[in-house]
Amino acid sequence: MNPRISELLIGRPENHALAGEAEWITAIFRKPANGAVFRTRTGFEGDRVANPRFHGGPEKAALCYSVWHYAKWRKELSLPMEPGGFGENLCIEGQDETDVCIGDVYRMGEAEVQVSQPRGPCATLARRWAMPNLVKMVRENHRSGWYIRVLREGKITAGEEVELVARPQPKWTVARAAHVNYSRDRELADLRELSELPELSKDWKADLRKKLQAAAR
Image (cartoon, rainbow, N blue to C red):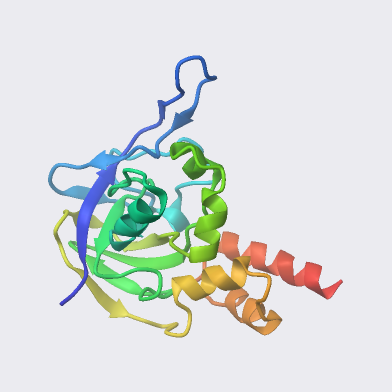
């Protein structure tokens, strides 16, 4: 049985600062959409990001996250984490970072998408849950989620299946890519190989090449 879209979530930048705090504009508090939503090359219609320098765009057109992770987070952190809690657009049932590979092509409803990179956890996620060490935890356990680029635009609806069309890089799961990027015990050969994957996003390639240059000094 194919994985499926458990939730499709949409958000817009809004102020979520607590009383007395400075303004905090973020779109991480996404909510379930009603019905089908059109998937463009740069994002879902009606969905926005607060900081386009670091979020959104063709290489990060949507964030996917495994619904399986939420039960683990609730048990470990005693926090009311539910689908949407990591700011994802697509909460997926039936796969996670150990099943999904860089470059995977999936059919979702009318759209066809490709996995471009692991999600890099940031301070916004930590602030969302008032947990400064959450970024470190995600980098260590690889429950990061993954970004997709859109190869064919079209409508997507919650409940639809996620059908694998092609897998050009079966060795490079999202979890392995995240480990090679963040772990201190990585092999330089793996770092180099990952940096050369044609399906990997430009931003991750550039960051990996910087790491390679630093290691060569």
